[in-house]
Length: 384
Ligand SMILES: Cc1cc2nc3c(=O)[nH]c(=O)nc-3n(C[C@H](O)[C@H](O)[C@H](O)COP(=O)(O)OP(=O)(O)OC[C@H]3O[C@@H](n4cnc5c(N)ncnc54)[C@H](O)[C@@H]3O)c2cc1C
Image (cartoon, rainbow, N blue to C red; front, side):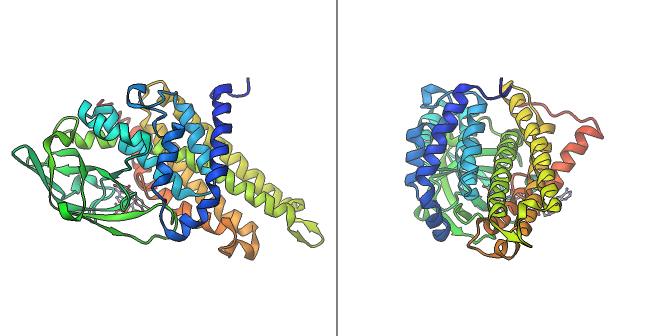
């Protein structure tokens, strides 16, 4: 047996995703230049079944085990366009995840089914200009008015923000509790978007969103009123797990392109791979990567078996994203001057992975959660 996690079906699926990535890879440069992923790609992904791997067949999903998703996330990351991985993660494992778990049948028909097909693109809108790590401080209000909610406020740093058809949005209600509401709309409905310019991950679009008297039907409430905060906290575990998996695959990809460069590059009459000091650095990087990847796989296995693995998901996200920053900085160093040039992919990856320790919960917040669970013996319970 080659792996306790991946069987022959997973490996066949891996080969098919690799083919898909090979087919779309020539477009990646244009996406980076345009700072946008064309919407048509989601339809192509939907046709392949990639957007509904974890969802029930009755909604067009594949109802596959979680390691099928691990394969998809890894192979997309190994394509080298990290922004694409982020956009996919937000759509297929975050926005739709909320609707699948606790959305009404109507919401599933209206948003989940077309999202799995790739006809609609989803986003999650939690962060605000004055509330990121401390999400309880949000000031976007949803006030009930007859059969509608009237929403006022703003969100920022929203992935897929410019292109999304709907936002799974964390709002405060009149009681000061939290509701999770699906908001769609555009200028005419009081919803405006402003594209943000980032340090990296250019392909993935990121926006500020403003809501001015945006009306949505009360039936757009996801789950129960007042429970939105718990739903968001719970769904972070899947977000952090997918971040850990994709980040490990990005490190693997960065090491591979670095080795390719080192095999070619000659200094002092020999290839860079022949210098022991450099060989040992590569050996250390692969060792650290393997340990982190196994933690991510173990966490994926816990998730697959229904365990609410808050500690492990936080550890895996913390370790993988911090490691990506240190290893990829060294990969750049190993490229010499070439690594500082935009012509070399490693320069882009160096910029791209910085955000890993910030979004989906910062490293400081990950350490806070892990400390609560290890030092204070706090246990977090599932709400759904
Ligand atoms: C490219 C990108 C995409 C994003 N996509 C989305 C998205 O799709 N949807 C969404 O809702 N959000 C998104 N975010 C927002 C992201 O989740 C937040 O930026 C993140 O949670 C941090 O919040 P903040 O920026 O407000 O920083 P702050 O919370 O203000 O933190 C600033 C610094 O203080 C530290 N800090 C804060 N509190 C503590 C504490 N208690 N103890 C120790 N240190 C602390 C933080 O770790 C950080 O270093 C995205 C962000 C980026 C950059």
